[in-house]
Image (tube, rainbow, N blue to C red; front, side, top):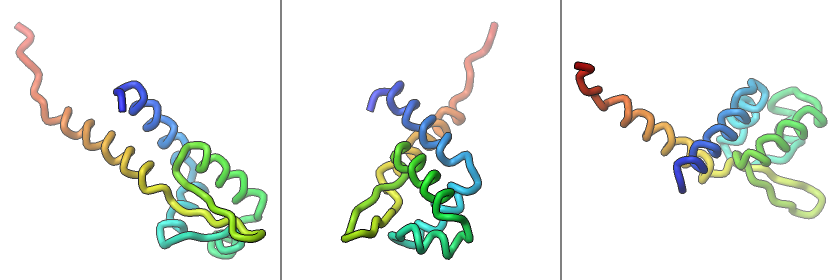
Length: 103
């Protein structure tokens, strides 16, 4: 992935993660695939609020979904998490570089 594309992906992921409700949903999904009714029960949030935040997370690539009958199940997309992890590792490596003298 080119640097600009990797940076844009990180921006999209960080924007999606910068909301406490979405972090709560992500933490819930970290234990496995769930439907909206499961997320409602675990978070105490209304279906409309959860659906809105699921849409944002899906558009950012943080989660995926699958339909089974009339139910839709959501889960974390490991590739997105790996992408963000790799971007952070790249930043960490850059922090170890020493600057040259300004003489």
